Image (tube, rainbow over all chains, first blue to last red; front, side, top):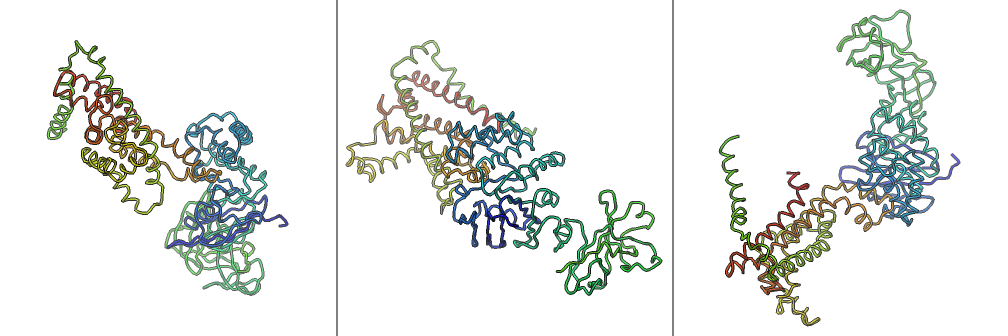
Length: 347
Length: 256
């Protein structure tokens, strides 16, 4: 990457029923998204970085300096909480001025800094509003201004857009992206929304069951998922198999793939690459099998058909096709898969 | 509504209000003005207001931190401490007065030490009135403030910490302002309880006009010598209590 690592850490939090153990390095100016299902430990990781949960092991070095023994108030961090936690008894301005005041600014200086930040997030005219008078999107921006006003080296965002309605989210996400671009420290974002992660982050770190299961640039993670969770997030069918050239042997079936490999591989294809037929189609598509319909559900503009049989897979077809093919749970269909859209990559 | 409930409910209301009405009916309204101006009355009223206010200040100073420890601190035996805090609440005030006398009296372990060091003997002084009132009223404040503290999401305090606020700053700038209504309500309750304190006061501080004779003591004494004066004093206390209730109306009556 060539950029200096700001955060170099191994976060270990042991609890009776759960153990988090992840390594996390973040470069200056980089935005890393911790992505994972509920209970995966991503928020715990964020709170460990902030100093809000004690670590049972590991270390956190920020710009080479160990900070894992410092209490939260002495770490050079800024944090945006999921529900913002703006102090209800303070105006937006004083909420943002709170951090600078804690860092020794005079009342006047604190307010000057706060006004500057409110201007930067476009809320200068709401300076005197109480948090209760702000909309969700405005509160989120105040929370961001408050976190940035202490000039943190590490910015932590816990599900920053989760509390917003869909319409506001687009606007706030775009603004947040701009502020993250301007931010020169390290930023770590927790989310369970893959789209949010892809739009906001330079790198995804997927956490499941307290460990990192996959990481990389969003596009690479989206193309080559390595766990069922990630595959479902990005909407791909995912299998493990053994490759011999363009042929991959899976459990119960072999598939022809676009890429040639040897040895253990993942195979992934989108549901749209599967075509369904009432009868065995003429010609011989190379990836063809007879499947049982496990379920049919609406999925955006198309209909997603869940297939069981030699290969558990989902296929997207049009509504018209559902009627035409008489697709109903328990029925039998022929499934054909385009080899050109079937990708294999080393496991 | 079933009469099994409405009739007792009406009776309860009558039971509560009838004595107060009697007080109003029997009051010597024609001579009220001059009676109120009697030095004895003014003295007792002044003493009551001063001691109740001092006791409340004392309770705030010690009670708010105690409430914080009970609500937030990870001290061992917290439940035991909480139970102990409420003991003065159920203890007959006279017993509290005896206990105070035993400990803080000149022959008590703490009282003797105090006397030897400073030559000051606490019982039967105005300071003793304040101590007796505070002893009885403190639990009201602690319980009220602890309840308020528990409704504050501790994550606000975490948010303040991530912004660089020290523990003390978090408490004074975030926690305390957020529980301010609870603290005010607790202080008013505490003050009202201190104002009405009788048993512990008369036991520990005695009944000396101008020094330790607060309104409730004056009422009790006047009842034996001058019943009309007792009514006047009672009405003054009633007026103050109603005033307090009115002040709390928005918080308590409205919430119930």
